[in-house]
Amino acid sequence: MLLKATLLSVASALILACNAVGAATSNIVGGYLLLDPIEGPSKLQALADNAASIPVNRVFLAFARPDMVYVPSSNTLEYVGLNYANTADYGFADLKAKVATLQAGGVQVFLSVGGWNYGCFPYPYTYYSVGGYGTSTPNYYKIQEYGTLSNCTATNMWCYTCEPPSQNTTLADFDIFPEPSNSATWQQAQTYVEATAGGDGVVWHPQMIPGRSWTDTNNSMVLTVPGSDYFLTQNRDPYQDLVYLAKDLGLTGVDIDYEEMWHADYYRNGPSAGPWTSHQTVYKYTAIIKDVQINIQAIQPSLLLATAASAAGGLSTSWWGGNLKNIWYNMHAWYPDAYNFVANGGGVNIMTYDLSDNEQYYECPDANTCTLSEQVNYYVNSYTANGMSAHVGYEIGIPAYPDPTHDPTHQLPLIQSELTSILSVQGANGGFFWEMYKPAGAATNVDATSAAQQICAAALGNVARCSGSIPQPGGGASPSATVTVTVTNTVTAPASTTTQAQPTTTNAPPTTTTSAPGGACTAPAWSATTAYNGGAVVSYNGHQYTAQWWSQNNVPTAGAPWTDNGACGGSSPTNAPGGCGGSTAWSSSTAYNSGATVTYGGYLYTAQWWTQGDTPGSNSVWVQGSACTSTRRRRHLYQ
Ligand SMILES: *[C@@H]1O[C@H](CO)[C@@H](O)[C@H](O)[C@H]1NC(C)=O
Ligand SMILES: *[C@@H]1O[C@H](CO)[C@@H](O)[C@H](O)[C@H]1NC(C)=O
Ligand SMILES: *[C@@H]1O[C@H](CO)[C@@H](O)[C@H](O)[C@H]1NC(C)=O
Image (cartoon, rainbow, N blue to C red; front, side):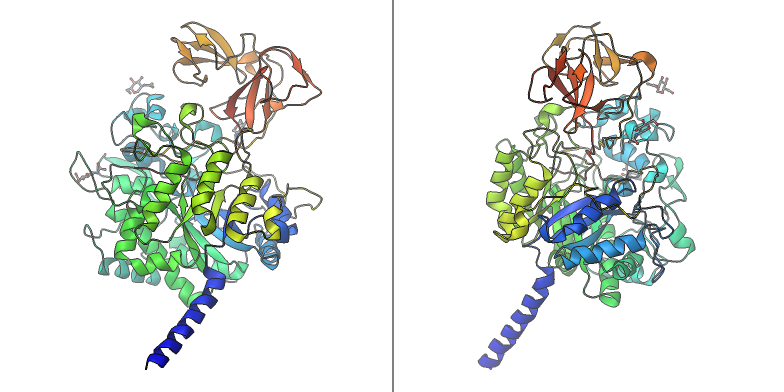
């Protein structure tokens, strides 16, 4: 009997070990790749061409729409929302070929669903997340730029809390995760959730349908839910179609990137003064995971399921709004098999991004846990200490939160000393990062290649790929699907949160710089080290600004204490915070006069006096301004 038991356990250990070859996430170094029709194909081409030597062994393709439709064997990305290409099949064949090449080179490929924009419902996010907890929350200033909450309307995109105006986003760029009650597997998932629900009574909200009218009874507001009801008119389940699509593309796995903070804040429960529960969001999210799991088991059992989780998601302590705190803790407590299906499959990957040390909003877990590495280790530990397997996430470059123009001093970017500290604790467990082509943004920040190499070496040891680089797109191989299209910014932005807090979202635009004709600013360039009195006029980023009161190191933006007098010469594009439109890339051979602006390393720089050949960032003639490029990210966290 003993022998038999031993043999059995050896057999199960072998089975586990075999599964682990595909499934173990401790030896994974994953990079998110944000796709768009302009650069996405060439970036993916470059990665595929160099698959054996890139310093990651998993790529997450981002992002598909949560209300997608994919009919098995249809071989088209038309209703998937990846914005990958405008070819007849919307890039399906091209993407599939690159997936195969990457895998042949030892790189797993996952398709990620959701992200920031495809989970941000602007109206409830503004009214119940950013604006739902009084005026002292971190992103409330976005509302104040328009007056008060009642000044936030569809016309101003509900005060641009999901995306700033510079993103040119329309309501069509957002989406929500639907509750497809037309689907048999969704109904199975609902039954599963109801059976062991450990908190408030389960309430589903199938009446909130993407693309259709919905009434907010709390505010007597009738509006259209972002997204499309196409899945419903076709009687399809997007979570099932995701699995069919993954099978037809030959993917390694799928990734659910659920960031619907508005859902938690709108459906919260508890005394009006708080704290609240966010149990309805646990139920909705778990049903999504379960529906995908049911379909994986039925359609493509080898497919792995991963998820991106919020940093505060593993905590069990009181919730004061925002940040998706407690969601994964409660999911694990009530639905351990669903949690573990993800954790032991593609992995639960914690978005330890966009952390801040701004104590005005209680953004450090405690007074002694404020550096990036201390906070990252704290949040990862909150998962693992409760027996929840999870992996650390790194954000390259300028964090999206706190807003780099509004609160630059409380940013916690990934610098080398912090990366070293995080790796010393988390390194052996692997990890993932956002995003493979995001610029470092500052000389002191670790760039994507260096971060990937170090995460790789810590997780995999000294294997050859860990000394490889993330290749630049266009290195010889031409993308097979280049198109001109509006880049819809499906991206994930950050959020923050805190005790009563709100996420942010900043998404600086990609550096598409059309150079502004004429119109040099005549006022002296704004300088971070100069103190300005009320009435002072400066130029910054192609605009002139007048100070309303004394300030120092307050980057001029359209808001207080600066008044935006408009573009100099009237012809340069508007530069919302984070934008670099209108400025051209710095060139070592060009002579620049005082006030000239250039972009360099993902930042805008303003010349303080005449200069030539002085690299921005290395010489005080250049004053660093806002970050330009994709500050797009994913999101955020906290207490
Ligand atoms: C906000 O709305 C009120 C009432 O409609 C209006 O009087 C006020 O001017 C608006 N504020 C801004 C900044 O537009
Ligand atoms: C919406 O209204 C209900 C019923 O009055 C209330 O219980 C709930 O707290 C309100 N939700 C929010 C987010 O204000
Ligand atoms: C938004 O539109 C303006 C004006 O057309 C353009 O200059 C800018 O590049 C656009 N921004 C993005 C992120 O596409």
